[in-house]
Length: 107
Image 1: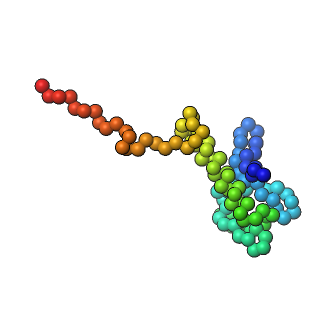
Image 2: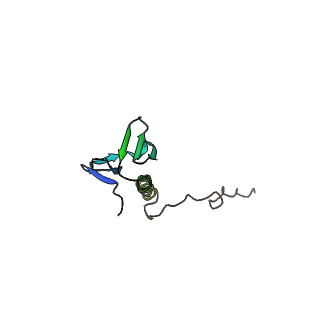
Image 3: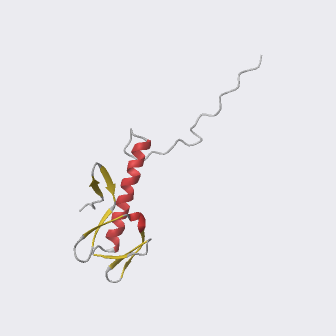
C-alpha cells in the first residue's frame, strides 16, 4: 500500500504524513516537526515542540512515510526548475559552461 501524504485543503494541496493514534483516529503530522521516533514497544513520535504522540505505525513505516513526503516535495521542485523533465536535473557544471568570449584581435 502506497502511503498517503497529500491532502486537499480547499484549492490548495497540503503535503504531510498520515499516522494513526492508538484509538484508531487518523492524525496528520507535519514531518518537519518530528524530532525523533522510538519503538518501545509502542511507537512514540516526539515533535520539536516537545509533544509526544503514540501511534500504531512501526518506526520503519513512519520513516517510509517521511521519505515519501520529502521525495514528493523534491520532485515538485525539480519540475519547477526543469519543467521538461520529471526527473531531477543537475545544473551545468563549470566544465560544461562556456568561458568568457575570446578578446578581439588588436589591429
